[in-house]
Image (cartoon, rainbow, N blue to C red; front, side, top):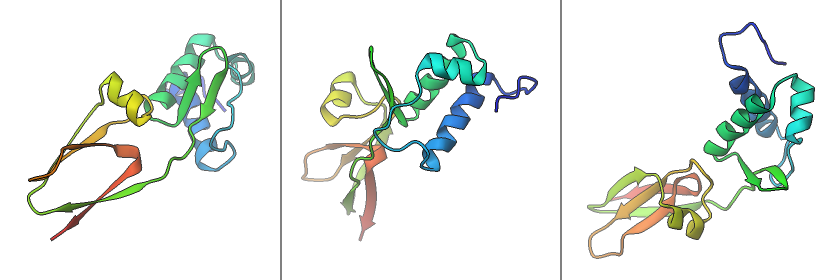
Length: 135
């Protein structure tokens, strides 16, 4: 429940509750979250607090929001293991809008930029990539 006397903002508390429901499997990948109105009623919060909570979860890549439909738990996508050999350089940054669209990356999810000698630079979604270094 929401602790209105807490120093933690109420929208962060709501985000914590929804995040815990996702982690525990009470909200499954692809499942719709309760509507903003339902969340407002259930937790006795205003629309701004509910929208801020959903924004936090979107920025963490846990949910996606479809205009005029609602918010859904983000489906789990397959994870790719990428081998890094020799003198490689890996940096992390936020993707451009075109990269987000092309790679189907949720808002708030960074990318790895993998540069290896004599190979094409690769842009990899950080939430679906395991980098493995091999000597």
